[in-house]
Length: 332
Ligand code: MTE
Image (cartoon, rainbow, N blue to C red; front, side, top):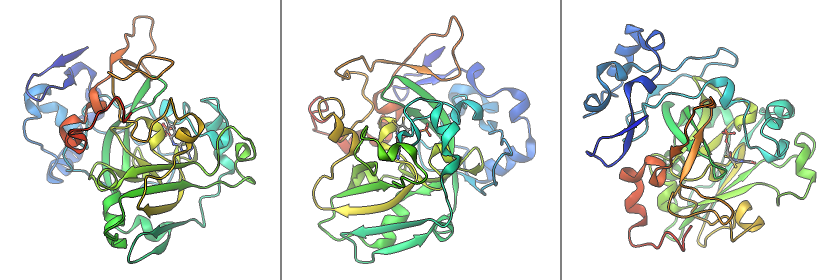
């Protein structure tokens, strides 16, 4: 059940939807988090003091990745985190197959070392980063984001990474850099579907410069306190929480700054269905289905109701102004 606070116009979860007491009652963790500055203003108004202590359970399957809780406004939703099992077994990663279970089954072939990410195009300082140097470029933060897929389902995932802007700033963008393009790895030897024609490979996505520089846009190296599982886009991916999930390119190898709007894989495949912006918008239907509601993965019981999808996936306060004056029906 959701309650509308009226204060910021968003619906927030009631306390019963927040991670159970046994998970969050670790006082030392609570103090660590509060010391990290996450005691945000006004949070207590809606969910009570205990909500401060939501902790993410670490599955202990992969290498831990050090982090502090993010203080970026909007970076930590208090909604109940999706189970690690669900987040790592229900995926879209077409390089490994088109079924939701394919990436978990097939992505073990992905080689994540050595791995290089190149920052190129309209920058003063183009650079190539070995993944282990890139990880150390800025402090790793834990951010709990909603991810809303265009297909009508959503998850809440604790990512670990830092704002993409930190990397872009380092490259010193030129004045005519207005867009950023992301390219994923396309390796036919380790990615079975790359030899197919279901998409134009490599998977490519893009953002406008101000979207890419927004502090919520994350360069993610981990989730649930551990390095990214391969099916979720190891060793590094983008996460843009206010856009449909397909904007969040996985296993990226290149970040290219451009003057003109770059092509994107899904727009190229079906331009009338997938626009460049792809902001989560319950008022603009996909040509083949409504975008007004969503199914939260893990809430599959007989009586589970679909949730109302929120404008900009609930991040309107943080990003709405980026689109002031734009016709969001035309710019879908
Ligand atoms: N990135 C690449 N390279 N290939 C893909 O097929 N799928 C996208 C996005 N990034 C995709 C990708 C889609 S449609 C979604 S919904 C999200 O990844 C899913 O991320 P998740 O599996 O970690 O939840």
